[in-house]
Length: 199
Image 1 (tube, rainbow, N blue to C red):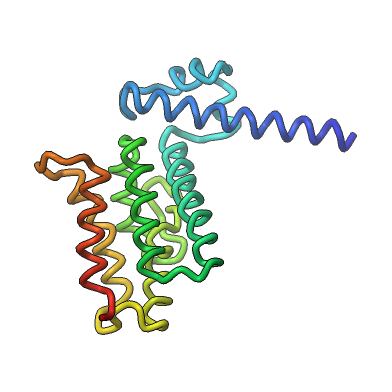
Image 2: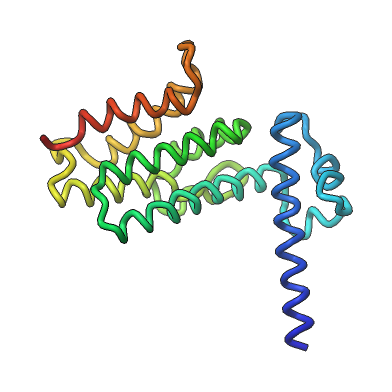
């Protein structure tokens, strides 16, 4: 019986991943609004009714994808923390990973920016009762650690600096400069890091 449950659970995980991966492809190809649940499920090669076994709405898929970003950043930074890298290197890496993820999944950018506004409070809620991914606190924690270690200026709150990091993505998204999104974020991040590092 345990083996049967194990297979069933594996199948569920694979189906959920197939839906998420198909959603990424369809949202990237057609845009979020133009993509229907039927489009996603056709791309996943699963029945439409199966969608609702895993997700309540397309919006919930977006939140799960933002969760993937948080997990990706957390995982990369965990290794750097274990190697005792300075806080400004963690901030640069977190910013770079985020920029790459958002550039590859542009349909997530508006939700990412909206989620940043709501993520300051524990268990912050997005519209329709969805819990926001805990992204901004990752930067706040690094900033606080850097302030305690004497690497980051402490005359400005970590919360304010974290908001500045989040504003970089919006500024890069609406930039009229003839450089790509990731390069734009990298240049702005470098300037911000230069301003907050203790000399």
